[in-house]
Amino acid sequence: DPATLASQPPLFKIKYEDIGGLEDEVLRVRELVELPLKYPALFARLKIEPPKGVLLYGPPGSGKTLIARAVASEVKAHFIHVNGPEIIHKFYGESEAKLREIFEEAHRRAPSVIFLDEIDAIAPRRIDVSGEVEKRVVAQLLASMDGLVSRGEVVVIGATNLPEAVDPALRRPGRFDREIPVNVPTRTGRLRILQIHSRGMPLADDVDLEALAEITHGFVGADLEALCKEAGMLAIRDCFAELDATDAASTESLAEGTSIRAEHFAE
Ligand code: ATP
Image (cartoon, rainbow, N blue to C red; front, top):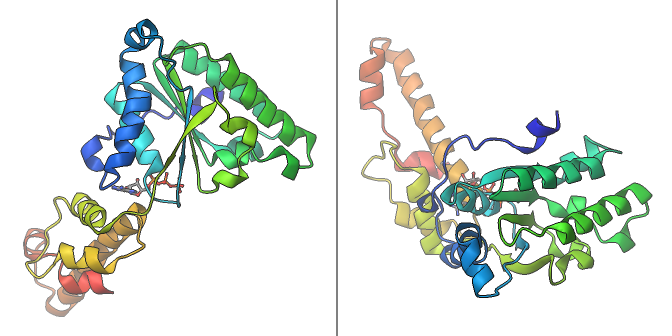
């Protein structure tokens, strides 16, 4: 069913405060995407052509999907999440038709955000691909972008780790004419992300998030989220190790006494 491929209703609302660091990135996306979606008439009156497409690029797990979902939630736009490799491989031979359907759906349900994750798989540089099918998919995407006459009510956000692998025709004015790097977070960004993902966790006093932010240079948001989850799992493991020894605690007292300690973050 094409509808279930593309439109996954957001599981929960993503808010801007769920995004750690990335203030500049979020600000730019809000200006370029949120304002036109919210105030199309204003842009029309001032004769400002909002971008049809914005390309987010940066390492995996740095928050590109998160930003796209937050913008869509904010304006209550219909969000269509398209996974690049999936649309190519799972729907081999039907990829162009799928793309057309996705753009039609976006129109019907506007305001809409079409999020094309791993867009390099949908639109690789045509000089690098030999297959006719692959070339036709790129051409279809270009045609769909050119066909957008929505004045901001439909915006395409592309995401890639490899901007150089995307067909240059896509990066021209009127298509993805804005590119926003989504970089690995700074120390302050890492601290924010750790705070976000440990929100509500029972952290012992010896857990020093500032110190963790200091030593996690190079970690992206997804890595920091995994670090918090892993620490929680280690705390649970310790807790069960103790339980085996005493075999006495009730579930409630077990839960009450358990906290996540610095050592759980260290492993
Ligand atoms: P990919 O290129 O692999 O699609 P991505 O850049 O789209 O990666 P996301 O899917 O947005 O990355 O991030 C994965 C998960 O990591 C998010 O669901 C979120 O929980 C966490 N995460 C990433 N970046 C951040 C951030 N800046 N603040 C808070 N959480 C983050």
